[in-house]
Structure formats: structure tokens, C-alpha cells
Length: 146
Image 1 (tube, rainbow, N blue to C red):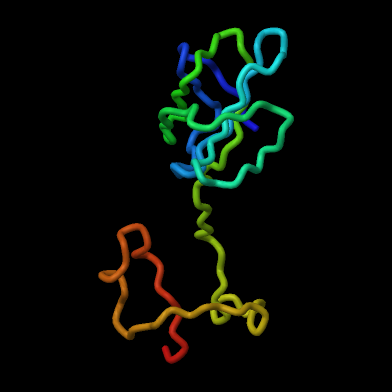
Image 2 (tube, rainbow, N blue to C red):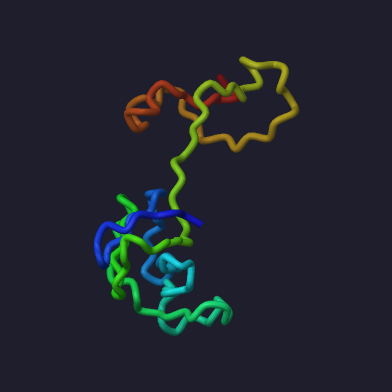
């Protein structure tokens, strides 16, 4: 669940950016008025998808007109007031985590020998620096026959 800010009568900005951009699975949005009464329940699933939201809220499809996944902004069909409380439910991107100081080479780190299963990349006798993307040129896979 993500909180939001109403930017205009049909524009909502969600705090968590990086909305997973899939036209068949847009954000589900629930809007409450200033008295905390349900105002809108916007189903982000595509037409033809099975109904999975239940009957607690009056879910309606085709209420989301546009999504900017990078800024977290969603344009909606119904009018939303700045006094409304809006919640969004959606998948989002997480940045990749890359460990650069992890030594899993059993030759340079004997304490892990015979304890870690590695997927070994094909090795070449010559330097791989020219074959790797610029950010990975300092890494060279270990070759068993070196």
C-alpha cells in the first residue's frame, strides 16, 4: 500500500516511484472522501482478467487513463479532490544489488573451498577486459586450469 498526493482533479502522485509498467496490471487505487467513506475503487487489471478483488469495495475497471512509472504519477478518469485520501496497490521496481567485495573464489579465499557451489563462466586464457561491459572490466572469472 502506498500513500499519495492529489496533484490535480485527475492526477495522483504516489510516494513510491518505479511502478511496474504492465498494461494488464495497472495499480489498484482506492479513494476515500474527507469523511473516510469509500468514493472510488479503481481496478487496474485488464478487461478479460478474472475478478479477484472481492465485493467489499465497488471495483471498476478502465478508470486509469495513464501511468508514468518513473515519477509515480497516475492519471485517472474520475475526479479526485485534494481532501480525498488515496491509496495505491501496485508492483514496483527495486534497484539491483551488486556485491563487489564478495570473494567466492576458493583459491583466493580458501575458507570457502568445497562449501560454495559456483556457476563457472567459460574462461579464456587471454584477458576478458575487451569482452566485458565497461563497469565489469575489472572482474575476471577464475579459470581452473590457470
